[in-house]
Length: 255
Image 1 (tube, one colour):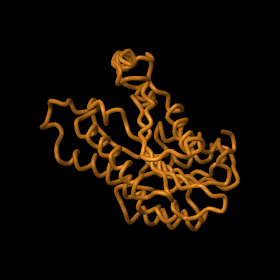
Image 2 (cartoon, helix red, strand yellow):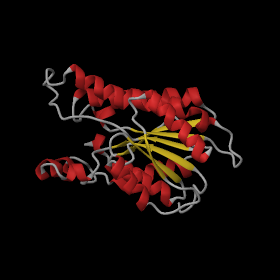
Image 3 (cartoon, rainbow, N blue to C red):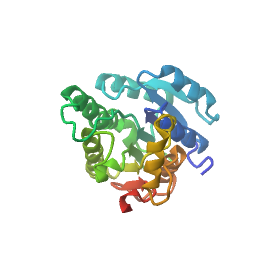
Image 4 (tube, rainbow, N blue to C red):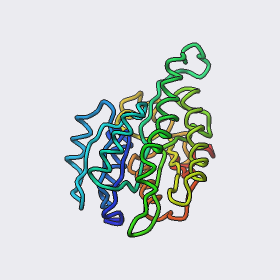
């Protein structure tokens, strides 16, 4: 996929996180100028930008708090001013907290609101802000692309808490609605990982991590780079695909 996206511009919300970083590196490796969107992680976002391979256009770290629609409008204006285009939007920003599913009181209203605002409203707001750039005609042809980073929790209903699972199910449903609403100018897909072996996951209880890997038919967790590869495939090879949910889960639903 080397240089297949040369001259294109991608915005990745949550770009400084474990999966987001792998996606940014993959897109830059394919020739894309990458906007690493961040909320509070300006330092790590800028460090990531500084480490990305040089392409035709400069990479940038820009503030992209997905819970703030006004700030996303500013982001869109900045992307327009710097690049004059946006070809790919990857909605990777998300939040959760571990709450045992039977503990309904532990899943308080403030956490519910935070999860739904970030994981559901956030991707919609980012699409809404960047839609004019994503839908704009391109001299080289092709469509704009939105990739929503979802989770196997959307279908398994097993995850960090009940509302997180519900938020990812809503995101997959919204992917399909947006794919229909924004066609033919913009394609919209979900990439749905199983548990990804990020630095955060590696810092958790090794026995729990190994148990999760053992429950997967391929007997390991997803690598962040494998999630990034699915995003790259959506941008470079799956050009007639929209409204689909692409699993990167090692066959976990089969177990």
